[in-house]
Length: 535
Ligand SMILES: Cc1cc2nc3c(=O)[nH]c(=O)nc-3n(C[C@H](O)[C@H](O)[C@H](O)COP(=O)(O)OP(=O)(O)OC[C@H]3O[C@@H](n4cnc5c(N)ncnc54)[C@H](O)[C@@H]3O)c2cc1C
Image (cartoon, rainbow, N blue to C red):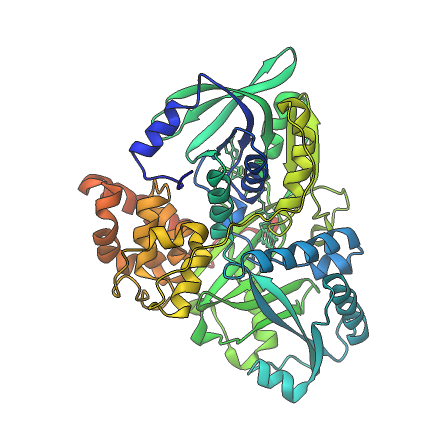
């Protein structure tokens, strides 16, 4: 049982175990889908290996809207099954990990002459509540709506429907699920890529993998192999003759300092230009605005970036709802983009492309794609149902808890601190945080992140690069201007002993991180053109 690992010794030990045995299950991809499959299999006693080519949650699973939601928009599209499963899973996750998956109140302003009509939205919410088995929405007249969302004044405002969904930290959700997998004996490694599939009598029997840090290759044997590579799914499927099935869609977000757009709750809206759903909400002390939905044909190995047209589109939506905010690109502290691994329904309509998942068995390669953060447990069980035959393991669907509860923390710590540490480290919180000083438990200016979180990450959470630390273990890279680099001296001082990088390595990491922030997390210049994919 363990931790994600300290860089160095733990990693070397894990790498040394890759060959020379046959794993029951090899999972390729360390996003929420792969993490869920590894966790569900490990809990059933399978010998599991999970490999991620970059960092855990490096793909879409750290770049989502961070909602653990029932998917009202899917209800609108008539997709009752996806909505029902999502609502049930949302309720379960909030029960099991209440610190990590928290309720989020939403407000949807109803405006004269704009769709959807109040009765239609209200009907949707009534169905939504029925699925969750408790009433969770109400109507607020204009005055009340404006008291709930000061500054809200879209043209023709009549009032608002207020309802509740849930939110999380997506990258931390992946890490928590991986920790649970490890607790049940799974080996999980970042920066190890599946390069080629290996076959035995025409069936997939393992992979050739490469440690991308050193170039060392490994021949890994496994009875069953799950391809959980999100937007990359079709790449591995090509080796078993699979025809492309994904339609990669880019979605981008803006991060704005909370004081500049102080929304006490989420405001959901239809974009005035094209009627697409857009929302803004308070997250980790900032305000997030998202999202777009655009065909994205770029190689998935190149990080997706927001375009200036997307920035304008999102700003237009905010300023329509909050005209006095006059939000401009200069207010944005960071942007991020992710690629939805959406299964192509051939409709040609991006917002309507099917969001439910598919699971396929092609010559023993089980591919699992589509879906959402919210439904990872159900998706995993679908994949294991097919994998069980190859793994030669019995398999039955069950409803056992994903998360192990946390042990009590130091009662002298504030409840907010305890809440935060339990959310992030679950059953490891008491152990990993036991030596924390008052100084460690203070927050990094401009955020709710504790200085301790950097130390824990460096010590226990397989940090291989500075961007792992600042973009996924903590979210300082998107919460602070300039990727949080203003705090670099203190960050280095706290993490140095655990990362053992030395001066030259810190210089390289800094250059790599700076380039990443400039290119993929900053507001693009308005000279940049992307007319082909603009909304
Ligand atoms: C803008 C946006 C907003 C969203 N909002 C929400 C939301 O609010 N709520 C919700 O529930 N869902 C949301 N989603 C959907 C959700 O984020 C995705 O469905 C989910 O994150 C996909 O997870 P995944 O594990 O399948 O893919 P990824 O997270 O992309 O993971 C796949 C991983 O596989 C790795 N990989 C690829 N090839 C290899 C290889 N050869 N070897 C090893 N590793 C490999 C990649 O590096 C990657 O990390 C959103 C998606 C987007 C884009």
